[in-house]
Amino acid sequence: MTDCIFCRVGRGASPSWKVYENDKVYAFLDINPATRYHTLVIPKAHYTNIFDIAEEDLKEVITVVQKIARLYREKLGMEDIQIISNTGAAAQQTVFHIHFHIVPRSTTDGQDIHWVTHREWRGEFNDMLEKLR
Ligand code: 5GP
Ligand code: ZN
Image 1: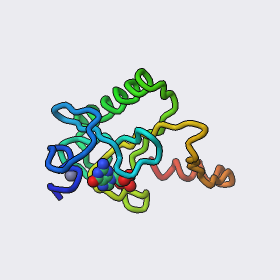
Image 2: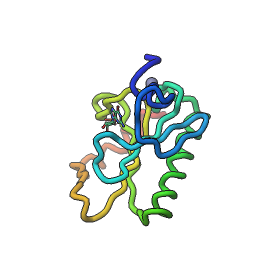
Image 3: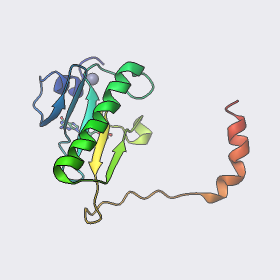
Image 4: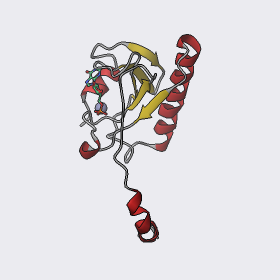
């Protein structure tokens, strides 16, 4: 896929609310924001997700993520931010052009991401790590 919706946004062929742009990276407001200033940061080049993005482009993207986090802190006083990159359909990726969500958070924003956790799996940790060797 070389002409997905985020490819078009990144080269200005689809309208978007631009936050920041340089040669390699484009940042814009999410059309369905979870909180105010919910932002997406993408490479202009097409990559599906963390598995295929070139290391150099990943560095460029994450540097812009930091730049925007600092911008929001400086201009808007936002100190609490979630940075999320869903990878694969089961991980709730819906647009298959890699993107990092920047979601400013506050205690009054009405959002609550809550994982069900499994402390009972600690007994499997050694076996799990063995599979990586
Ligand atoms: P994902 O679910 O893949 O992690 O996130 C995709 C995000 O892209 C969603 O939050 C969705 O609202 C946003 N999105 C999808 N299409 C567009 C679009 O055309 N413009 C903008 N600004 N955001 C989009
Ligand atoms: Zn694309």
